[in-house]
Amino acid sequence: MPTEINDRVVAWRRSIHAHPEPGFEEERTAALIERALDAAGVEHRRLAKTGVVGVLRGGLPGRVVALRADMDCLSVQERSGEPFASERAGFMHACGHDAHVAMLLGAATELAAQREHLHGTVVCIFQPAEEGPGGAKPMIEQGCLDDPKVEAIAMLHVDPRWDTGTAGVTPGPTNAASDEVHIEIRGVGGHGAHPHRAVDAIPAAAHVVLALQNVVARETDPLASVVVTIGKIEGGYRNNVIADRVHLAGTVRTLDPAIRLATHEKIRRIVEHAAAAYGCSAATEFGLGYPVLVNDRVLTPAYAAYLKAKEPALSVIETMPPTMGGEDFAFYAERVPGVSCRLGVRNEQSGATAMIHSPEFRLDERALPIGVRMLTHFARGFAAGEFGAQASQG
Image (cartoon, rainbow, N blue to C red):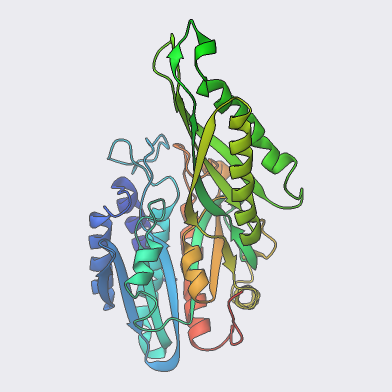
């Protein structure tokens, strides 16, 4: 990658990092993307309020390929110590989306500079609200995969578990389904001095929390991956009032669609009966979040082999374990063959060791040109038919 483009990628990343914006509020970021695409001569349009779709038409015949980057930040107060740290109190790019945008802009710029030798069409999708409430679905609903008709899609996500110079390109499930669970325990309120005249929802709620541990410990195959976490309990009025209601909220993570549904039913049953044991009733509701992200089982190894040939110095891992974190790239991968890649950004010498979503998160910027090359290789190679000819979702 030319040094000039690399310098721009770093500058874009730092500018976005200093001015983080949450989901569907990424107006400054979108404007930066549009200026960069204009400079590269790439046509673009807005979707889903702050989303940007760039379309780069090559000079040679070929297939339509898409590259996706997420744009939004997290509501985290930054403590990274970076000189370009967030200037907005309470918000931070703690998940690397600033780098994702910058790398895709770098890829678009490099591909546009060689468009006369580029096969097919490259669709650059800059998506809002990955951290919530979810920007992939409205982008898809408004046609980001249909005009032109995308045949394959790829993304990168920075990963501080792995050193710079490492990339994960693994077929099959890579990110868990991420669902919300909301539980209401209902009892009968009363005076704290007369518990026998009330039905206390608080001990029932405590029993429910403990009983739910059996979903994973005793009701799920030990070789399957399931997480059930209750992260919020809210109930009661004051010290001498017996609570009539308690609200619980949590998250459910699974890597298999069948186990996902079965886990929901187990939670409903356990909650209902555990509450009933204390004389209470219960209502359980689920908010379906992002589905399981499954990397195409044909396209992914084909791209891994192609990447190894193009980047012999890069350590390409095809057995990188999945994460229980959610990722709404899953919606794209349900529509067309998709590949989600992990980009190592860990560097102990520079202090880039904190995990994503941490206030101390930093990344090794030496990984940025690697990410740009990975994206350009996918776009060029797939569009030209150099790999992935038999790609089929599943």
